[in-house]
Image (cartoon, rainbow over all chains, first blue to last red; front, side, top):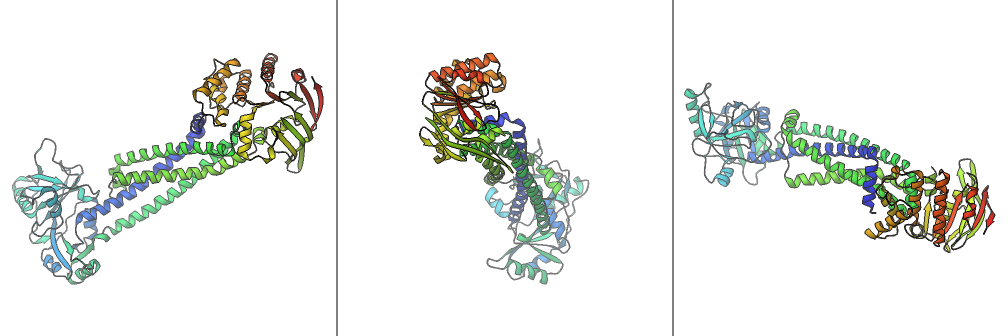
Length: 397
Length: 225
């Protein structure tokens, strides 16, 4: 009879002990993978989001930093304005290679086109744009025509419709950007020409007309010269252009990052406590089981089992339970997080992007290995002790 | 075949030291059926465990097949137990999570025998011989005490041992079942297996080729055919 079969039979034959260990492992595995997924999903989302912005520095009106970052991060609509004259002032700052303005339009709530309740409308300038253009060149091979829009991953044309109607104006969805997990996913990008046509049309077709304040913009995207110091350029913008604040893209979402770090430490603390308690409990359960099974173990020794065989048979049971529990735990937590990611991220106030398959499998493998190691460590001592007992004494006790 | 030379075994129980086996000398030759009788707590089982190498003597030496057990490593001792000895415990010793068939096959695991179907066939034959041919897939809890004892004897014979050590194989059994079990052991002995058995029942002495009584850790010859 193989060691594996003996271990499986023992697991089946000791339902209570097996269930306790299995549930402990399942709990630790679920929590471990769940928290890691949420944290890494947020980090992943943040990185992809910043990359998608495509600018080295974002210049926003003074006092609007939090609003803009919240809009970009969570898709919370906002309206901020500054004079368009700031564009030239920013362009004149040493180290700046290119600038392009963007306008945040009045946002739509409960739009039928999107799988989100709020939609964020952003207008870009095709003449100077360097953030949307690379995507258009690659995916569309041409600039957006009048009446065309591109959307984040949550934007779609309503079923049975040809257009996305905004302020009574029909727009054609030319394509969708990849998912970022940030507010960009619920953003609709359009040219100034389309925005002006929409505003004109809204005067007669919309309940509330779309107003674009003339000579006003919401933010300026800045690309710095190769080799220029981003921080230096940002500092110069702050000093030389009044009424604006530069946000360096790698440092963006600072408040969120701070919040995420706090959350991370909270999770880590709970995790460590949970992990230690589970390891102790698993160790105790196996100690009790080993004590209960002294006679069985004495019988095995009398039949010719070596100490090492006894040790391995106990370890094999633990490994099978650990693998089973860990696997079910990671499947369950992945499933729950995938299904409820919207609810989890909105209640935690953080963006989330499910990691790619390679990263996900890496997480699962690391988590499972960690759990396995924990269980083996917890079981090592009782398995060693019972395997070293004199069989005749074990049988008598 | 089995030699005990001035064997003493002490157990240290805190402040108290007990000596269940005291300076025992015994020789059991090939093909003998030796029974040791004595009341509970006289050291019979301890002596049997010493022969099986399940405990080590405090003094003296135990030799099985001319090999001093004290000189054997755990691996060598385990190999000797699995290949040369069968052991019948006093208590119910079938593994509860295994079927009767798997219990009988178990000892073959430790000899490295990967006979597969042959092992199952041999185990089934053994169980058939002992009247348990219909119980192969039963679990120990489904068998009566007598049936369990028979299954244990079948298991002890699985690796065709040259020595069978039996610790009170008929305890807790009714008279009829006791007779059946002793009949089986006699049959096994007639097949050439050396048997060393301990019991508290004087009535079993006639089955033996030689019998000793044990008291306060000492052996004295009481019967020889």
